[in-house]
Amino acid sequence: MRIPFRWFQRLGIEIEGNWWRVCWPWLLVWRCSAAVVDASTGLLRWSRLVPVANASVNSFPSDAATDGVGAFVSVRDGRVFGFAVADGSLLWTAGPVTPASEPGATDIRPLTVNDRTVVVGTGRSMLTGYDAATGQTRWHVESGNGGTSRVYRFGTSATLSMHYDGGLTLRDTKDGRRTWFADPSQGKGGVNSVAVFGDTVFATSLSDGLQAFRLVRK
Image (cartoon, rainbow, N blue to C red):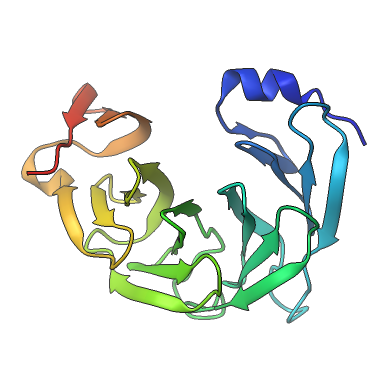
């Protein structure tokens, strides 16, 4: 399989399609498998099937991220897998902390990795941080804003979560401690899309249009 990956790399953004998703810089998930392609040639390095734990629940991959050492994949039944980027060997399996069978849980499991911590959200008001090397749970906290729709890297040691209620939450990646939040109920408007650039978060909402938040540690 060959992918015009220089094009994706030049954009430096995530590309979404009906069946697959490419995450910066090399990680690709396709139906029930995960794969890594060479960033310079677009040639397939390896691919691995995501094991099905229970045929009665959705075991398709939900989200994926890489830090160049590990390739991390969340599955819609709540499990998380860590693969070695170099050869595709399975490093660890974790979860589910919120099984899809629980009432009100969603299939979407947004994921990112920062500071050697894999952060996974759920449709419920829970966020979990896993050690990127071992898969051990570092922290498990209430989001404070309901279910999480997306999770973004922020700087070198934080993650930014966008929630279904339109709120935003910034957390320390190491311990899950909340360091900033934007609550739509306090007149900031419900955020529906986010872009992170340096220390600034750009967000759009139907009520307030384009907003920018500059987040600086005090």
